[in-house]
Image (cartoon, helix red, strand yellow):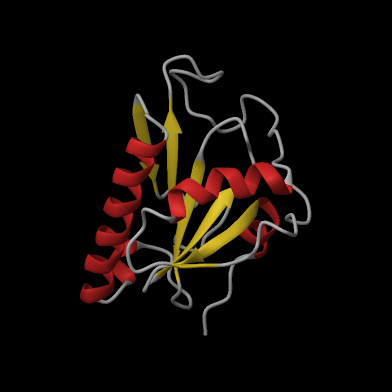
Length: 148
């Protein structure tokens, strides 16, 4: 049974579900930063997914990446599955700009997170959601994550 890792639940806003993955918004308004989490129990690495789930993950990640790139007019999109702090398989999708505060370095640990307000969360997700296919949005931006 799928259960979101407590750290991901603590640090994100749930946005909705693709056929395979839960889409989360990282609670850091410094960057448009989304996370895909396959809804499969006890999976730490992509190769542990069934082959059809691997293909579905690639499909969902590619769709998300294309929409993020267009909607947010990115200079670069960072996509990574690190899992050093959270062992549950999850893919970060981070929109980057040559002028963002961390450019050209990674975003992790350089600056404190700037939490979203409920309204800013809704605004960030609204334009994205309407462009996603096979996606069921949650009405989750009404309640913030516990702590970021």
